[in-house]
Amino acid sequence: MAKTKIHSDQKYIEGLAANNSIIIQEIYKKFVPKVVYYIRNNSGNQDQAQDVVQEVMILLFNQAKANTLELTCPFDAYFFLLCKRKWLNELKKTANKGVTINEDAGSISESAHELVEQTEEFNEKQQLFDTMFQKLGDKCQELLKLSFEIKSMEEVAEKLNVTYGYVRKKKSLCIGQLTQWIQETKNFKSLKNN
Amino acid sequence: MNEERYILFDQYLEGELTIDEKANFEKQIADDPQFAAEFAAFRTAQQQLENKFGIAAEREAFKENLMKISDKHFHKDKSKVIALKPWNYAVAASVVILIGLFFFNYSKNPVYEDFSQHEQAYFTERGNANTTLKQAETAFNAHNYKAAIPLFEKILKESKTPEIQLFYGISLLEENQYTKAKAVFEALRAGTSVYKDKATWNLALCKLKQKDYAGCKKILLTIPQDYEDNVEVQLLLKDLE
Image (cartoon, rainbow over all chains, first blue to last red; front, side, top):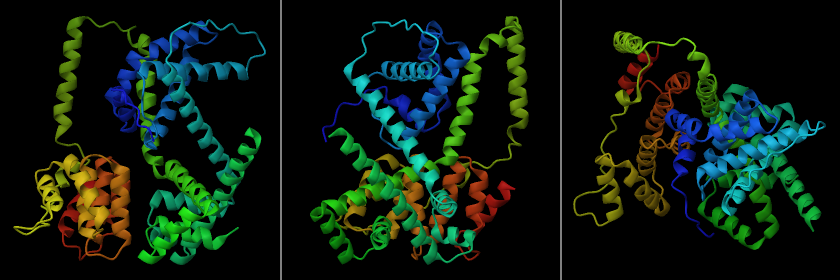
């Protein structure tokens, strides 16, 4: 794996993962006004801008926690692009009325685009996984939820009033079911791409 | 559905296979692309679940904090309506400080630092040749956890002993690497070594440091009475009341 250079703005990512209030405030102060300005100039209002920013922040938190977010460009460009694309998606959803996009021909680097794509992909995968999880039976959902919250399978067994052996086996099989679905979507995707 | 296979995957990930079984498993991964793909998908599912539920509490805390900061940022115009004269700020500030001082000693929640007097590590005897171990011991005892972590990782790669795992976990905890620390302590806790209860105690400290008081208490209550440092456990439990 080629290791690209990590930008010093990685501190924002780490700060988000650590739920560091000072860093979060700094992001709002430094980078959010530009987003608000953009959204307000493109058929949006202050409240909508607030929502978009919040959703993007939660998305960043999730990705940072999964340790898959390594900034290779300034946070500013990356964050702005993410918010902007999110807003344009929102507009598309409700876009029967004609919207005019005031495109600023800002120079956004290649790596920012790449990174944004990665984040969006991460988000899509997570959403896809959520749908799969919802497809599981109630028993599986409950058991998996407990297994990953509590971690100790002995405790899970106690809580569900079944044996340790049973929960272990059941957990494997529930994850197995998810595994099958993940593989099926992968095969489906590769069929589509070929 | 290939049930046996999924059970095997889980056992492998939980580190429950014998050395032979493990070697066999890894050989199969290398030789059989279909097996490898299936295992990769299994691991993806596992990671997604970890991300979905393993950090659910942290995510909630983050969201709550985020909302607060966000609201403050977006509605700051409102607060400007009550324009204070500069000296009012001074008065307001001193009142805040006074209130702060007044309540300071009464803050009910115990803090991690009061309970984090970790024991010293003594891995090596004088003249012991294993230098990584010595370095790790020195770093840990000097509270230089950041340096100790990679050393422990190196040692654990060679031989996994519960003792090293415990001190590795404590270092992670000190460096706020909660997810990793938690995993290490959970593993010890599920085992049968003499460090089982100590791991549980540190797991509780993990929660305490993250200010998850209910979670902390829940774990403390699972520590048996005959645990060597039961006094600490009881003290912390009392503080949590």
